[in-house]
Image (cartoon, rainbow, N blue to C red):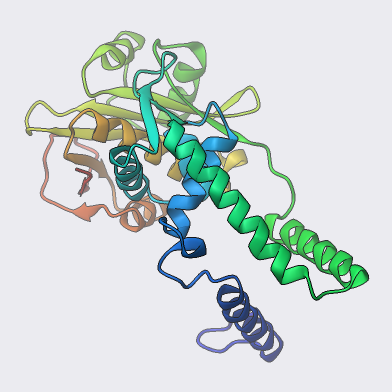
Length: 303
């Protein structure tokens, strides 16, 4: 394992082997070309079209999770594909903040062509390989995918609340006790936040258990700004990127509501939280509120 700037020789050889294979297959499959399969789309655009075509109920947030791409980047690509009349974006009836994605007739024809071209490319690649070697190749690819996916984990669902339910109040209470919060929300104040514009609360679920939360509250003192509050993940659920998922949903909601800045406060002892915020693009700023417990103030531009 790495020690300082030194890497174990065996691991160094393994890293080199993986990088060498990456260089080989990206060239072999033509992934370095400007346009995928020498067609009209980049590789990412083609993948987006494929995923939307493969799932009639695809949403923008689900697409982000599948492709593991930044929300802003996905949004720009979807806008471009919409302008090219390849996809449609419609507001979800279940959640007014969510976008449902479907292919247009032109988009559907494009996916058919892409699938045909991709099949021909792989057919050409396999044409000169004998049957037993093809079976070994496919088995090896399946094994690689299984190893990289790792052990199956319980899926995480992020839900935006419409009312202050028992799960929300319970996890907020756990957060208050853990972080020793002095200024606490009452059930009535939580309900008020849920009803306010550019505000909301999200819960993260693993199975039927609420394991994380985050609150967004509009800042009346700063134009087009909101405040991130009450970010918390239960210790038993940590290691599943739940805090990132909560913040992703919060930022996407705020961006859609015209919010340009998200502010937050914390204090110096919360090193892990501060590192998370910095990794996600939050920068330190001047004090913006009168929270007596806060010692550090940060903000992030999202729009």
